Amino acid sequence: MTRDDLEADVYRDFGYATAPATAVTTRIRSYLNTRHRRILITPGLEQLRTQTGTFATVASTAVYGLDMPIAKILKLTDTTNDQPLWQRGLDWYRTVEPDPTAASGTSEYWIDRGLGPALRNIGTAGTGLPLYVVSTSASDTTQTVVVETINAVGSITTATAALNGTTRVQIGTATNHERLLRFAVSAAGVGEIELYDAAAAGNLVSQIEVGRTAAQFTQIALWPTPSAIVTIQVDYVHHIRDLTTAYTEPQLPLDFHYLVSLGAKIDEARQKGRDERHSEWNTEYFQGIRDLLAWSVSYDTIIIPGEVAQR
Image 1 (cartoon, one colour):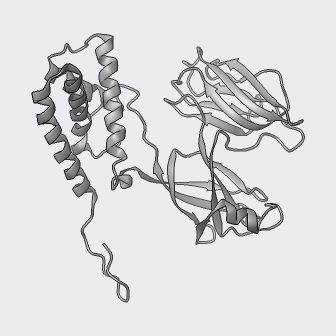
Image 2 (tube, rainbow, N blue to C red):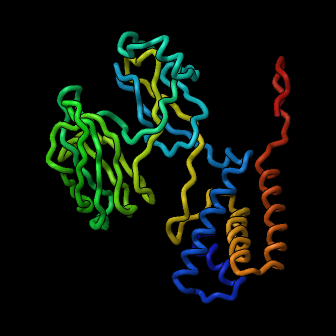
């Protein structure tokens, strides 16, 4: 079911017009997105958002911003050397390797460095580069982009630029940006909004995905610092995407899409004081959540000779 289908389902049960007043549409869409999120954060449903991606290491580079919609990393694997990477804490990393450039080789561990706006640093230490912004959609021409950086002399710089669709636009006049602190846009784009360190080609420094207004990526460190290019496979829990367009669908199995509109009906019934329907729908909703949890669990027993049986 698309967002349009879910909205229509709510409208029908409340006797609303096919295209009701803007205030009603805005309220129902808010309910749909809130319920969508609440369903997907239910403990036990993480597997519905599990995905896999890869990235390539760079020799002598320890820290990486991962351009994947990551809510939580599950596992990292070095597929070039066919070995898993084990997680360690930041305190361990700082104790073992105060200087990340001191040891290099095949990485064995990864360290969570939190969230940040950048996929990479800008230019080289002590020099920096200019920054250019562009959208993947020609329709993005009304938004203003703002970046905040530390420049090559250690000062914080803030600059803005107006998007010009798929044509790159320099942000401000500075040419010595070195580290990105913030990358945001005044309104969500039709396309992805990308930040580069050159007027043509160059490196992708950061990006804002469709439906969002700021860049934010999971950042990790690898130890030892990679000495060569290898491929790292990332198993992760995908963050929840709102139903931003008429044709988007919930991140749920098709047979359970109805839970999103059912939840919105509960919220609208509460808003309208329809207690009799609120109670009826509430019972149906929680039975549906139980059914979804049961559907998501595999009860097949896996028996491996010489090992304890696992479910």
